[in-house]
Image (cartoon, rainbow, N blue to C red; front, side, top):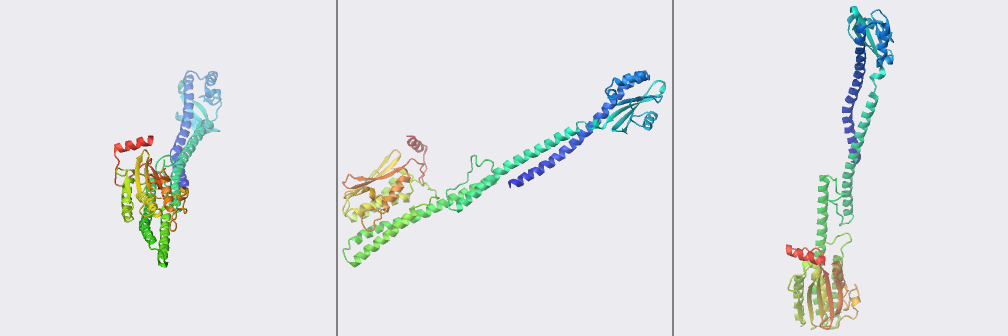
Length: 460
């Protein structure tokens, strides 16, 4: 495309230059010719008064010497007596025609032309003034003019080539960026986008801008579809994991025997498979950008605590929820936060005896939402190992995956997960979620006052 635009510019500019410069050059050539003959006529006219006064050869010779043409030996006077004063170059026949017809004209002479101008002298006789015009006088300045015009034409062609090349380079660069982005997207890099504004997009035609916008919209759609697919898989797995916890607890109460052991083994194996599904669903490829969608943490906490409260009543576990009355927006997807809360609450039911009390406290601080999940159990023997994948406590069926998922979720928002001793005397898990990012709560629209408050928190 770039080379084609350069060739088109060269062809178009060349035709325009030739259309204007050739007639202009011919006009310059004709102007130089006319200028030379006009100068010759002025030289001849300058001698007319002298011939009208006298035909003396010496006087005429002095008059010739006083002119520019006479000084260069390019003027002669053919007197009526057939005497020639000066250097004559025209043939006598032409001189006789000029004298006989009493009209001026030009004739060819060696190396140029001769202007013959008849002049009537005393007694009605006719003298002929001959002014020689050399060939070089007819073309004086024409070569320089053609050279200047040629340079102008070349400059116009060069400028048009430069402009076409720059325009072509921008168009080609935009097309190449779009092609490179398409190849990158095809190879699995879902974070690639084509810039629509700024220095890189400057000079791109509207058609390529529209194509780039359509490509970006397609890439965004692909990312959202993949995120929705992962979220759906994780949500389904999470829904399976909660009743599996209840099933495992029930299986633990079956007592001893081959059937009881087989049931517990099958439940543990099924729980491991569900954990593997959750692990795969939560592990986003490096090329897939994270889609930041916020949710109300207080609402999700109330929902999940309400779900687990039914099992707590069955096991006679006292429980309490505090601080979840107001809104607590966080930059976390609703399904991710629900899975993290289920992992925290599920650990309470897994690792503490039946009847052990637990509590959930929510604190909304500047730039963070803190969730405290505590119990009245024995606590963690090794808090560091509890958050490492595959080293959790609780025996068969426990993979450590739950707290690892919670930790990664917290770190993704700029927060953290900490383990300690609760007010009830057992273990306490502190989940801190950062809220410094821009939040987009589904179905909610921020007010100006709310935006000012968030801006004030970000500036602190």
